[in-house]
Image (tube, rainbow, N blue to C red; front, side):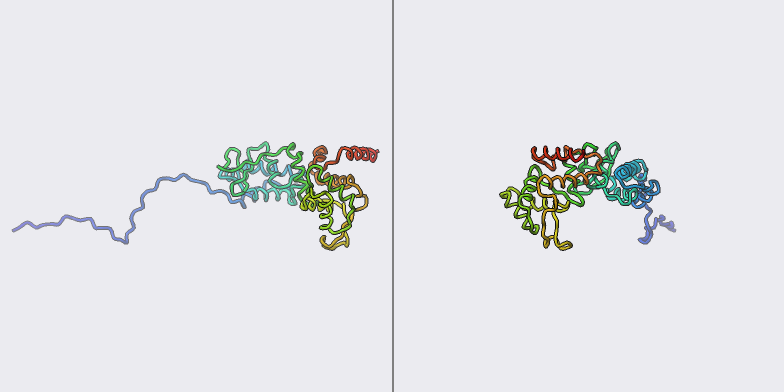
Length: 303
């Protein structure tokens, strides 16, 4: 009898419905998730109490407190290291510490200037990205392609450029022409003594100065004068375009008009503390003869 053939055992093929065993994955380093900015702000508000004042000293102290906290707090410093904190978030933090914060009250035209001043002496700086966003970052980790905004010092604030920016910001806005153009416009107004609407007064200044001054410069200068009381307006309450302008009492000379502007400028620059009048004189220039007479008048009035 022939030998019995026993088939060799076969491994059954896996069914389609059976899942394959997952391949082991390489261990991945743990990366902590950044703390949301809302959580960060809540942490900050628990750490820094609101200031009881809103003057220059309080605002500058608040900026230092906020920036130091952001630099030292573990979660905040992690955000800064990851690419920075948007300046709008830093602004919210500042307004928690000084609820009615207005940078102008500290001698700055914008929040970014206040923070540039506050960053001085820290390891932080302000940068502007190519899309225009501004961030608070570590000086040691500036994002590629970002523009670093320089820290500001007291000497930077006491400059003709900063004084001019402050005068042009807020109300009244004193947008004044450079050089002796301001004096020329004031002298023409005092000479012509207009009693007309704003548009006619602008045309009269341009024509009276032989076209040397443009209509736009004449307009912004007359608006600055109007905002500090160089003109009386009537009827009261009517739109400016429908009002008749006349020089106010005492505004019969160019010297008087510029002196009115100077006093208004000093009031706007008060938050800076001691205003450098030498710098202010470069913005509101008087001819040498007029300046000499005005100096005599000022000395006589102080006796």
